[in-house]
Length: 201
Length: 201
DNA sequence: ACCTGAACACCGTTCAAGT
DNA sequence: ACCTGAACACCGTTCAAGT
Image (cartoon, rainbow over all chains, first blue to last red; front, side):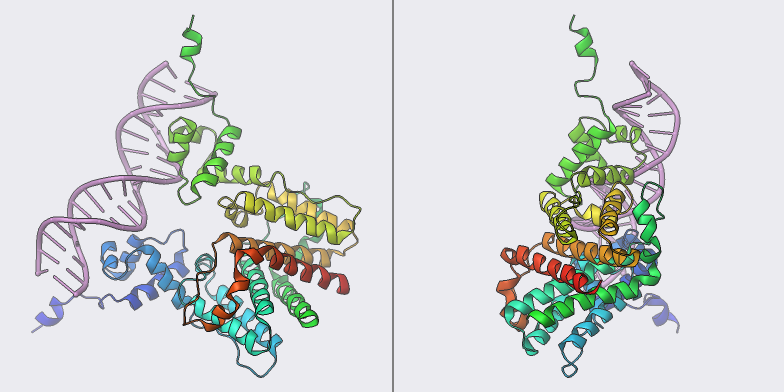
């Protein structure tokens, strides 16, 4: 009578979705460097090779992880002006990075395959909708995205190591380079970009 | 009589400098992904393990490569105004990235160990020298560096894949996202930052 | 159809042994 | 002092074999 339960494997069946979900959790936990198909297999309760029945390669799997990651980022709807939509997007993108610091670098690497492209389309669509010409929309998108990625990767890569006597100028400004100023500096850079486009486009 | 020449190894002796130099050449050639101690050994004419007599780890070796890479970047001297010094630095940093596209990501990763910190000190020193307060200097440095790193990493990571019908807005602005506009867009972002600090600091 | 075991061609790194 | 050979504990991936 216990045979049916005993016969089937003790774990839920493998699916693309479950594998991607577990991958993201594992990356959040141990980091990209340590993440391997063998450790993923251990986390899933199967052999590493079983994964290749659901994904063509580790690379394809990581694309699926990016999809999971980006799912919740979106561009605010029309109504409050383009500045606040741009700001809203930038902040939610940065919030995602802080929620998944170890997985975020994946996004910077493979930003245009996968669902990330839908997000790009959303942002550009919003800019066009707000009246930007194609040329300005492209410039603003690039400058904004590049600034966000650079700032976020920097914030994630650890705090500035203490300055020594060899670096007197770093020492003088060091207090303002610490994490407690990250929010303020990120917003200031964002404002610079937004204000610059406001007066010139 | 040929014994002295025949006895010593046919290659120049290994030194930290020669290993780092060959590493950079090899990375420029085959990329970071393919770069391994074994392939480096082959390029040097020795076994991979010989490298560990000169560097404690591959990681330490990569730090030395970063030092080699950054050697030629510097901040223009005083005299032409801070805007043009900042611009000059940003352009030479970007030029380095285009000269070593496959090695550049190393810099973004390990920017503050190694000699890269001297460069940071130079920039901040220039800003202080030009009259910025510590707080403004720190903000401007961060915003500038983050923008440069984001923009450069983006430029290096390949062109935007062609838009499909699923991405109508990307399609509309696509022409302006191509590499022939990279220079112009990079400079525009740079100006945004510089002008923003000009009017407010 | 899905999973496993064994194997292949790689890694970075250690260490005893050679010169 | 510097280099090598063999080995260890890992990788991603393939493939024949199992159910």
